[in-house]
Length: 155
Length: 62
Image: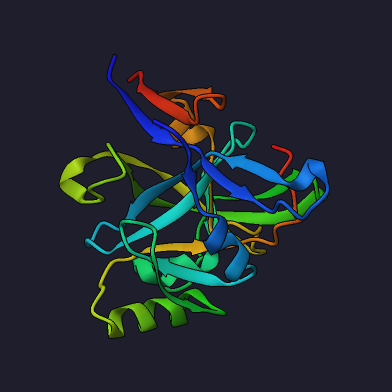
């Protein structure tokens, strides 16, 4: 199997209480592409607990989607914010997984035709990468002590 | 491979949208994605990395 290695993202605030002084976040820059070739690159948070790949609705117009709510596939989201805390609207797009962080070009990416959700309420990060389209195709292997994670292509 | 440190980005651009170059250097920041892309493109960067930087004290329990 082919695997790709990426660094965990470390953020620190030494003046904060001990539990908040350091964070190690599984952030990955991915691409979203429309069928007509529009492309955006998004620093996204890998969330193994999310069933879907979800993004701020601000990205939709940059992918040729005039009204992100205009779709037959939309679902309420539940999570830390409680039941039905948000709503996602799904569209057919191409997810680009760059093979490394040095060359973020389409010819250096694995392309996945999938459904991407745009949410009503932003959630801090611009995008969350979940199961459908990503983690059902790649094994996620975290190695926080050594500062990296890997995506191993399964399909 | 060790971690990449984005402390400066997360400290200085909390609750903003940023455009980054491929080395994660900030090109532009703004209150919206539209605005930050416009600023980056004015600087000649057509397809920057875009990011929404969350509040540091909001934790993601995922």
